[in-house]
Length: 127
Image 1 (cartoon, rainbow, N blue to C red):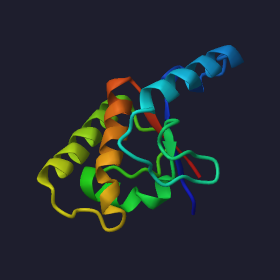
Image 2: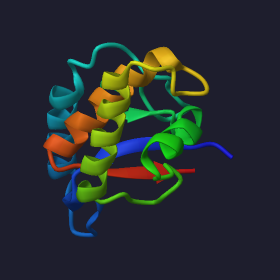
Image 3: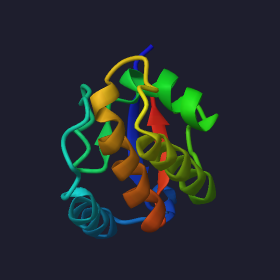
Image 4: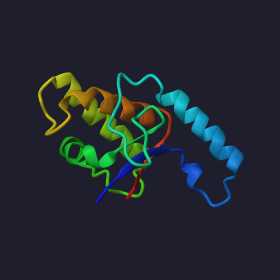
């Protein structure tokens, strides 16, 4: 089963959000994520990190191993995202090979979660 992972502001999921608000949120998200130290794997509908999205399926097993959280969730609240960012950054600092696949992507993934945590995003899965 596929999985695309997105950083969203909580208001973006409300029923009464309008197109202008969504476009402004998208532009802001692209500003927040533009300085990642590299690209993550993209999906059919997700980007490579710089737009606030990536192919979650490629990283789920490793993220769950390192953080205790699966990316296969409809929404991960910002407090949990902060904890995930801490776990991923700790793994980067330890400098050990900790990911099953894509070990060289760990610093990029940690940076992505840090940006999401610091800017109040939730992490949302779509599959």
